[in-house]
Image (cartoon, rainbow, N blue to C red; front, side, top):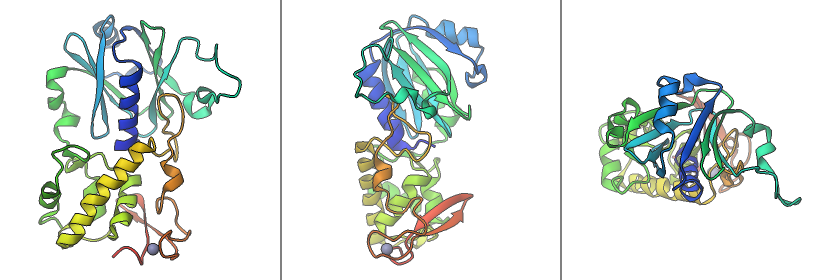
Length: 287
Ligand SMILES: [Zn+2]
């Protein structure tokens, strides 16, 4: 599932590519994704200017003129592509055409824009969600209301992390992934963050010492910042709006590296199941 760095990459792309454009139409072959009557959705977004995109946790918001916002959740396999009119027409022969990659072929929804561009939603598993909301009421959407502090927001301070960990016996990995506590961290980055901080995923949150908590806070910021810089991790379906993979998978230290050597101490990286998900760690570097 796309996590904070992937969603941040997409939102940045949207602001560069489609901000100021106007929606002229919408097509879908899987209308269930749109959580309202399809015709009404199409009518409400048509002829509306795109004011910009933003993000809370893993959730994308596209604000429209007239006070409406399109809320998109990519879920497991969704990603957004922005295509120019006749994408391939003037392509140089040596330029890679990512749109023809298989992973970018599962287009189920298309927003048509005045510039001739299209915003397309590729989603092989079709679990994604599109919801139209009042811009001033997005905080009241069920999925948003329950979110904790965004991991890259100014509100997420060291004190805030301390408060979240305090008195909780939950395993630290599961607590960090709990979107109602901290929004944005999922299974990939939690393994990398805990490796960076030198903390075992199974440690109870309230057993962390002060200096470990500080290391953890710094690791969250460091790993997420680096992943944003590298435009996310494409270990499966995630692609940016040009259809291109991110680069963070090239620098992963423990995630999906079970059986390989720890980059720090050469011990074999282990994988354990925790909360139904694979959890990767070095049994020596992490305590
Ligand atoms: Zn190690």
